[in-house]
Image 1 (tube, rainbow, N blue to C red):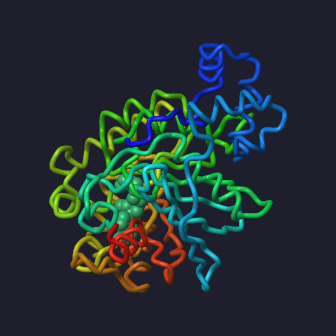
Image 2 (spheres, rainbow, N blue to C red):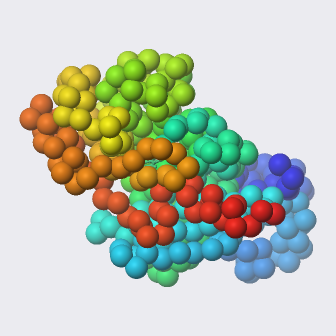
Length: 348
Ligand code: SAH
Protein backbone atom coordinates (compact mmCIF):
# COMPACT_ATOMS: atom_id res chain seq x y z
CA UNK A 1 0.00 0.00 0.00
CA UNK A 2 1.23 3.47 -0.90
CA UNK A 3 -0.17 5.10 2.18
CA UNK A 4 1.96 4.00 5.10
CA UNK A 5 0.39 6.34 7.64
CA UNK A 6 -1.49 4.78 10.54
CA UNK A 7 -5.23 4.56 10.04
CA UNK A 8 -6.20 5.62 13.54
CA UNK A 9 -9.73 4.35 13.12
CA UNK A 10 -8.52 0.79 12.58
CA UNK A 11 -7.07 0.56 16.10
CA UNK A 12 -8.84 -0.96 19.08
CA UNK A 13 -9.11 1.46 22.04
CA UNK A 14 -6.30 -0.31 23.91
CA UNK A 15 -4.04 -0.11 20.84
CA UNK A 16 -4.82 3.59 20.52
CA UNK A 17 -3.88 4.03 24.16
CA UNK A 18 -0.60 2.25 23.58
CA UNK A 19 0.14 4.33 20.48
CA UNK A 20 -0.49 7.53 22.43
CA UNK A 21 1.75 6.50 25.26
CA UNK A 22 4.47 5.53 22.73
CA UNK A 23 4.20 9.08 21.37
CA UNK A 24 4.59 10.49 24.88
CA UNK A 25 0.96 11.66 24.86
CA UNK A 26 -1.65 11.08 27.54
CA UNK A 27 -3.30 7.67 27.11
CA UNK A 28 -6.64 8.89 28.51
CA UNK A 29 -7.11 10.84 25.28
CA UNK A 30 -7.67 7.50 23.52
CA UNK A 31 -11.35 7.39 24.49
CA UNK A 32 -12.00 10.88 23.14
CA UNK A 33 -10.10 10.20 19.93
CA UNK A 34 -11.84 6.85 19.43
CA UNK A 35 -15.31 8.33 19.71
CA UNK A 36 -14.47 11.29 17.45
CA UNK A 37 -13.01 9.06 14.76
CA UNK A 38 -15.94 6.68 14.81
CA UNK A 39 -18.39 9.58 14.56
CA UNK A 40 -16.68 10.44 11.30
CA UNK A 41 -14.92 13.56 12.58
CA UNK A 42 -11.81 15.05 11.00
CA UNK A 43 -8.82 16.09 13.15
CA UNK A 44 -9.79 19.78 12.98
CA UNK A 45 -13.21 19.00 14.43
CA UNK A 46 -11.80 17.27 17.54
CA UNK A 47 -12.14 20.45 19.53
CA UNK A 48 -11.66 18.99 23.01
CA UNK A 49 -8.12 17.85 22.08
CA UNK A 50 -5.11 20.15 22.33
CA UNK A 51 -4.13 21.56 18.93
CA UNK A 52 -0.62 20.10 19.29
CA UNK A 53 -2.04 16.60 19.75
CA UNK A 54 -4.27 16.97 16.71
CA UNK A 55 -1.25 18.05 14.70
CA UNK A 56 0.80 15.09 15.86
CA UNK A 57 -2.04 12.67 15.07
CA UNK A 58 -2.35 14.14 11.63
CA UNK A 59 1.39 13.94 10.95
CA UNK A 60 1.54 10.27 11.91
CA UNK A 61 -1.75 9.05 10.54
CA UNK A 62 -5.07 9.68 8.87
CA UNK A 63 -8.54 10.31 10.26
CA UNK A 64 -11.00 9.32 7.55
CA UNK A 65 -9.76 6.96 4.85
CA UNK A 66 -12.87 6.87 2.64
CA UNK A 67 -14.58 9.57 0.57
CA UNK A 68 -17.48 9.36 -1.88
CA UNK A 69 -16.44 9.76 -5.51
CA UNK A 70 -19.83 9.26 -7.09
CA UNK A 71 -23.40 8.51 -5.95
CA UNK A 72 -26.26 7.11 -7.96
CA UNK A 73 -29.79 6.99 -6.64
CA UNK A 74 -32.31 4.52 -8.01
CA UNK A 75 -35.50 6.12 -9.26
CA UNK A 76 -37.32 2.87 -8.59
CA UNK A 77 -36.67 2.27 -4.89
CA UNK A 78 -34.30 4.96 -3.58
CA UNK A 79 -31.36 2.56 -3.36
CA UNK A 80 -28.09 4.48 -3.39
CA UNK A 81 -24.93 3.21 -4.92
CA UNK A 82 -21.64 4.77 -3.89
CA UNK A 83 -18.29 4.68 -5.53
CA UNK A 84 -15.86 5.10 -2.63
CA UNK A 85 -12.36 6.45 -3.03
CA UNK A 86 -9.50 5.08 -0.89
CA UNK A 87 -6.24 6.78 0.21
CA UNK A 88 -4.23 5.15 -2.60
CA UNK A 89 -6.87 6.19 -5.17
CA UNK A 90 -8.27 2.73 -5.60
CA UNK A 91 -12.04 2.61 -5.47
CA UNK A 92 -14.72 0.19 -4.29
CA UNK A 93 -18.50 0.15 -4.28
CA UNK A 94 -21.16 0.16 -1.62
CA UNK A 95 -24.92 -0.08 -1.91
CA UNK A 96 -27.36 1.46 0.57
CA UNK A 97 -30.81 -0.11 0.58
CA UNK A 98 -33.85 1.26 2.39
CA UNK A 99 -35.82 -1.55 3.96
CA UNK A 100 -38.73 -1.13 6.37
CA UNK A 101 -36.56 -2.67 9.09
CA UNK A 102 -33.80 -0.12 8.61
CA UNK A 103 -31.11 1.07 6.26
CA UNK A 104 -28.87 -1.74 5.04
CA UNK A 105 -25.39 -1.15 3.67
CA UNK A 106 -23.54 -3.58 1.44
CA UNK A 107 -19.83 -3.16 2.23
CA UNK A 108 -16.80 -4.17 0.12
CA UNK A 109 -13.91 -6.06 1.72
CA UNK A 110 -11.34 -6.08 -1.10
CA UNK A 111 -10.52 -4.04 -4.20
CA UNK A 112 -11.66 -6.62 -6.74
CA UNK A 113 -11.65 -10.30 -5.87
CA UNK A 114 -9.56 -13.31 -6.79
CA UNK A 115 -12.15 -16.05 -6.40
CA UNK A 116 -13.10 -16.03 -10.08
CA UNK A 117 -16.83 -16.88 -9.84
CA UNK A 118 -18.07 -16.92 -13.42
CA UNK A 119 -21.16 -14.80 -12.82
CA UNK A 120 -19.54 -12.07 -10.73
CA UNK A 121 -18.33 -8.71 -12.08
CA UNK A 122 -16.08 -7.99 -9.08
CA UNK A 123 -13.61 -10.67 -9.99
CA UNK A 124 -13.07 -9.84 -13.67
CA UNK A 125 -9.78 -8.01 -13.07
CA UNK A 126 -8.64 -10.08 -10.08
CA UNK A 127 -7.88 -8.80 -6.60
CA UNK A 128 -5.88 -5.57 -6.32
CA UNK A 129 -5.58 -5.62 -2.51
CA UNK A 130 -7.33 -6.24 0.76
CA UNK A 131 -9.22 -3.40 2.41
CA UNK A 132 -8.26 -2.46 5.93
CA UNK A 133 -10.77 -2.48 8.77
CA UNK A 134 -10.66 1.34 8.75
CA UNK A 135 -11.61 1.39 5.08
CA UNK A 136 -14.61 -0.83 5.79
CA UNK A 137 -15.63 1.43 8.69
CA UNK A 138 -15.22 4.45 6.44
CA UNK A 139 -17.80 3.04 4.03
CA UNK A 140 -20.32 2.84 6.87
CA UNK A 141 -19.56 6.40 7.93
CA UNK A 142 -20.02 7.73 4.40
CA UNK A 143 -23.40 5.98 4.23
CA UNK A 144 -24.39 7.46 7.60
CA UNK A 145 -23.57 10.91 6.27
CA UNK A 146 -25.75 10.32 3.22
CA UNK A 147 -28.59 9.17 5.50
CA UNK A 148 -28.90 12.58 7.14
CA UNK A 149 -29.87 11.62 10.67
CA UNK A 150 -30.93 8.04 10.11
CA UNK A 151 -28.12 5.53 10.52
CA UNK A 152 -26.99 2.29 8.95
CA UNK A 153 -28.83 -0.40 10.88
CA UNK A 154 -27.77 -3.55 9.03
CA UNK A 155 -24.55 -4.42 7.25
CA UNK A 156 -23.93 -7.14 4.70
CA UNK A 157 -20.37 -7.95 3.66
CA UNK A 158 -21.48 -8.63 0.11
CA UNK A 159 -19.76 -5.94 -1.88
CA UNK A 160 -16.63 -6.71 -3.84
CA UNK A 161 -14.18 -9.14 -2.30
CA UNK A 162 -14.16 -12.39 -0.38
CA UNK A 163 -14.35 -11.61 3.36
CA UNK A 164 -12.77 -14.91 4.38
CA UNK A 165 -9.78 -14.13 2.13
CA UNK A 166 -9.22 -10.96 4.21
CA UNK A 167 -9.94 -12.67 7.50
CA UNK A 168 -8.04 -10.59 10.06
CA UNK A 169 -9.19 -7.20 8.84
CA UNK A 170 -12.78 -8.42 8.52
CA UNK A 171 -12.80 -9.70 12.11
CA UNK A 172 -11.24 -6.45 13.28
CA UNK A 173 -13.91 -4.51 11.37
CA UNK A 174 -16.69 -6.56 12.98
CA UNK A 175 -15.36 -5.91 16.48
CA UNK A 176 -14.85 -2.19 15.83
CA UNK A 177 -18.14 -1.50 14.04
CA UNK A 178 -20.08 -3.11 16.87
CA UNK A 179 -18.13 -1.28 19.60
CA UNK A 180 -20.51 0.59 21.94
CA UNK A 181 -18.31 3.72 21.86
CA UNK A 182 -18.08 3.52 18.08
CA UNK A 183 -20.69 3.00 15.38
CA UNK A 184 -22.41 0.47 17.63
CA UNK A 185 -24.03 -1.61 14.88
CA UNK A 186 -25.35 -4.82 16.47
CA UNK A 187 -23.50 -7.95 15.39
CA UNK A 188 -26.88 -9.63 14.99
CA UNK A 189 -27.59 -7.10 12.26
CA UNK A 190 -24.52 -8.07 10.26
CA UNK A 191 -24.17 -10.77 7.59
CA UNK A 192 -20.86 -12.12 6.35
CA UNK A 193 -21.02 -13.84 2.98
CA UNK A 194 -18.44 -16.29 1.67
CA UNK A 195 -17.99 -18.37 -1.44
CA UNK A 196 -16.86 -21.15 0.91
CA UNK A 197 -13.28 -20.95 2.19
CA UNK A 198 -13.64 -23.89 4.52
CA UNK A 199 -10.77 -23.51 7.03
CA UNK A 200 -11.60 -19.83 7.60
CA UNK A 201 -15.31 -20.62 8.01
CA UNK A 202 -14.46 -23.05 10.79
CA UNK A 203 -12.14 -20.58 12.46
CA UNK A 204 -14.82 -17.91 12.14
CA UNK A 205 -17.27 -20.14 14.02
CA UNK A 206 -14.94 -19.88 17.00
CA UNK A 207 -14.58 -16.08 17.12
CA UNK A 208 -17.64 -15.60 19.31
CA UNK A 209 -19.17 -13.11 16.88
CA UNK A 210 -22.96 -13.57 16.64
CA UNK A 211 -23.27 -12.46 13.02
CA UNK A 212 -25.17 -14.28 10.27
CA UNK A 213 -23.00 -16.45 8.07
CA UNK A 214 -24.07 -16.69 4.42
CA UNK A 215 -22.67 -19.27 2.07
CA UNK A 216 -22.82 -18.59 -1.66
CA UNK A 217 -23.86 -22.06 -2.70
CA UNK A 218 -25.42 -21.51 -6.15
CA UNK A 219 -25.59 -25.22 -7.00
CA UNK A 220 -27.07 -28.47 -5.73
CA UNK A 221 -24.05 -30.60 -6.64
CA UNK A 222 -20.32 -30.51 -7.38
CA UNK A 223 -20.72 -30.80 -11.11
CA UNK A 224 -22.74 -27.59 -11.46
CA UNK A 225 -20.84 -25.75 -8.73
CA UNK A 226 -17.54 -26.43 -10.49
CA UNK A 227 -18.86 -24.85 -13.68
CA UNK A 228 -19.63 -21.65 -11.78
CA UNK A 229 -17.10 -21.31 -8.99
CA UNK A 230 -13.39 -22.20 -9.07
CA UNK A 231 -13.46 -22.66 -5.27
CA UNK A 232 -15.53 -25.80 -5.89
CA UNK A 233 -12.43 -27.44 -7.36
CA UNK A 234 -10.70 -27.03 -4.01
CA UNK A 235 -13.59 -28.11 -1.76
CA UNK A 236 -16.43 -30.45 -2.57
CA UNK A 237 -19.87 -29.03 -1.85
CA UNK A 238 -20.07 -31.14 1.32
CA UNK A 239 -17.18 -29.33 2.92
CA UNK A 240 -18.56 -25.76 3.09
CA UNK A 241 -21.92 -27.23 4.09
CA UNK A 242 -20.25 -29.14 6.91
CA UNK A 243 -18.49 -25.93 7.91
CA UNK A 244 -21.95 -24.29 8.05
CA UNK A 245 -23.19 -27.08 10.29
CA UNK A 246 -20.21 -26.48 12.54
CA UNK A 247 -21.04 -22.77 12.57
CA UNK A 248 -24.63 -23.55 13.58
CA UNK A 249 -23.42 -25.89 16.31
CA UNK A 250 -20.96 -23.34 17.71
CA UNK A 251 -23.13 -20.22 17.50
CA UNK A 252 -26.68 -21.53 17.61
CA UNK A 253 -27.41 -19.33 14.62
CA UNK A 254 -29.01 -20.47 11.42
CA UNK A 255 -27.01 -19.92 8.25
CA UNK A 256 -28.19 -18.44 4.98
CA UNK A 257 -27.50 -20.11 1.66
CA UNK A 258 -27.33 -17.80 -1.32
CA UNK A 259 -28.53 -19.29 -4.58
CA UNK A 260 -28.45 -17.22 -7.77
CA UNK A 261 -30.83 -18.74 -10.29
CA UNK A 262 -29.17 -19.03 -13.69
CA UNK A 263 -31.17 -20.03 -16.73
CA UNK A 264 -30.28 -23.49 -18.11
CA UNK A 265 -27.67 -24.01 -15.39
CA UNK A 266 -29.12 -24.45 -11.89
CA UNK A 267 -32.76 -23.30 -12.03
CA UNK A 268 -34.75 -26.44 -12.88
CA UNK A 269 -37.23 -28.06 -10.45
CA UNK A 270 -34.88 -31.06 -10.41
CA UNK A 271 -32.12 -28.82 -9.10
CA UNK A 272 -34.51 -27.55 -6.41
CA UNK A 273 -35.25 -31.10 -5.26
CA UNK A 274 -31.58 -32.01 -5.26
CA UNK A 275 -30.81 -28.87 -3.27
CA UNK A 276 -33.50 -29.76 -0.73
CA UNK A 277 -31.88 -33.18 -0.42
CA UNK A 278 -28.43 -31.88 0.52
CA UNK A 279 -29.89 -29.37 3.00
CA UNK A 280 -32.20 -31.74 4.79
CA UNK A 281 -32.08 -31.37 8.57
CA UNK A 282 -29.90 -28.28 8.44
CA UNK A 283 -30.94 -25.13 10.29
CA UNK A 284 -30.78 -22.85 7.27
CA UNK A 285 -32.60 -20.44 5.03
CA UNK A 286 -32.24 -20.29 1.25
CA UNK A 287 -32.04 -16.88 -0.40
CA UNK A 288 -32.96 -17.07 -4.07
CA UNK A 289 -31.63 -14.33 -6.34
CA UNK A 290 -32.44 -14.21 -10.05
CA UNK A 291 -28.97 -13.81 -11.56
CA UNK A 292 -28.15 -10.24 -12.42
CA UNK A 293 -26.95 -10.72 -15.98
CA UNK A 294 -23.38 -9.52 -16.47
CA UNK A 295 -22.70 -8.52 -20.06
CA UNK A 296 -19.13 -9.82 -20.00
CA UNK A 297 -20.33 -13.37 -19.25
CA UNK A 298 -22.71 -15.64 -21.03
CA UNK A 299 -24.95 -16.33 -18.04
CA UNK A 300 -28.55 -15.17 -17.81
CA UNK A 301 -31.17 -14.62 -15.16
CA UNK A 302 -34.54 -16.34 -14.94
CA UNK A 303 -38.20 -15.32 -15.20
CA UNK A 304 -40.52 -14.76 -12.24
CA UNK A 305 -42.28 -18.03 -13.07
CA UNK A 306 -39.00 -19.92 -12.82
CA UNK A 307 -38.28 -18.35 -9.44
CA UNK A 308 -41.76 -19.25 -8.19
CA UNK A 309 -41.49 -22.82 -9.44
CA UNK A 310 -38.10 -23.28 -7.76
CA UNK A 311 -39.36 -21.76 -4.54
CA UNK A 312 -42.47 -23.91 -4.42
CA UNK A 313 -40.39 -27.05 -5.01
CA UNK A 314 -38.22 -26.13 -2.00
CA UNK A 315 -41.31 -25.40 0.10
CA UNK A 316 -42.76 -28.79 -0.76
CA UNK A 317 -39.58 -30.28 0.69
CA UNK A 318 -39.94 -28.09 3.82
CA UNK A 319 -36.89 -25.97 3.12
CA UNK A 320 -37.24 -22.39 4.33
CA UNK A 321 -36.64 -20.10 1.37
CA UNK A 322 -37.43 -16.63 0.05
CA UNK A 323 -36.77 -14.70 -3.06
CA UNK A 324 -34.42 -11.82 -2.42
CA UNK A 325 -35.73 -8.49 -3.63
CA UNK A 326 -33.59 -6.91 -6.28
CA UNK A 327 -32.71 -3.36 -5.45
CA UNK A 328 -31.27 -0.66 -7.63
CA UNK A 329 -31.61 -2.50 -10.90
CA UNK A 330 -31.39 0.78 -12.79
CA UNK A 331 -28.10 1.86 -11.16
CA UNK A 332 -25.99 -1.25 -11.82
CA UNK A 333 -26.63 -2.46 -8.29
CA UNK A 334 -24.91 -5.82 -8.63
CA UNK A 335 -21.42 -6.46 -7.34
CA UNK A 336 -18.64 -4.76 -9.19
CA UNK A 337 -20.80 -3.39 -11.97
CA UNK A 338 -20.40 0.30 -11.21
CA UNK A 339 -16.70 0.04 -10.56
CA UNK A 340 -16.24 -1.82 -13.84
CA UNK A 341 -18.09 0.91 -15.65
CA UNK A 342 -16.02 3.59 -13.91
CA UNK A 343 -12.76 1.85 -14.78
CA UNK A 344 -13.88 1.60 -18.40
CA UNK A 345 -14.80 5.27 -18.59
CA UNK A 346 -11.74 6.56 -16.77
CA UNK A 347 -8.62 4.56 -17.57
CA UNK A 348 -6.31 6.46 -15.15
N1 SAH B 1 -17.32 -13.17 -1.88
C1 SAH B 1 -18.48 -13.27 -1.09
C2 SAH B 1 -19.27 -11.98 -0.94
C3 SAH B 1 -19.44 -11.07 -2.14
S1 SAH B 1 -20.61 -11.49 -3.37
C4 SAH B 1 -19.38 -14.39 -1.58
O1 SAH B 1 -19.03 -15.01 -2.57
O2 SAH B 1 -20.37 -14.69 -0.95
C5 SAH B 1 -22.20 -11.30 -2.67
C6 SAH B 1 -23.22 -12.22 -3.30
O3 SAH B 1 -23.59 -11.79 -4.62
C7 SAH B 1 -22.72 -13.64 -3.44
O4 SAH B 1 -23.72 -14.54 -3.06
C8 SAH B 1 -22.45 -13.73 -4.92
O5 SAH B 1 -22.41 -15.05 -5.34
C9 SAH B 1 -23.59 -12.91 -5.49
N2 SAH B 1 -23.44 -12.48 -6.87
C10 SAH B 1 -22.32 -12.14 -7.53
N3 SAH B 1 -22.59 -11.82 -8.80
C11 SAH B 1 -23.91 -11.94 -8.96
C12 SAH B 1 -24.81 -11.75 -10.06
N4 SAH B 1 -24.36 -11.38 -11.25
N5 SAH B 1 -26.12 -11.99 -9.85
C13 SAH B 1 -26.58 -12.36 -8.63
N6 SAH B 1 -25.79 -12.56 -7.57
C14 SAH B 1 -24.46 -12.35 -7.73
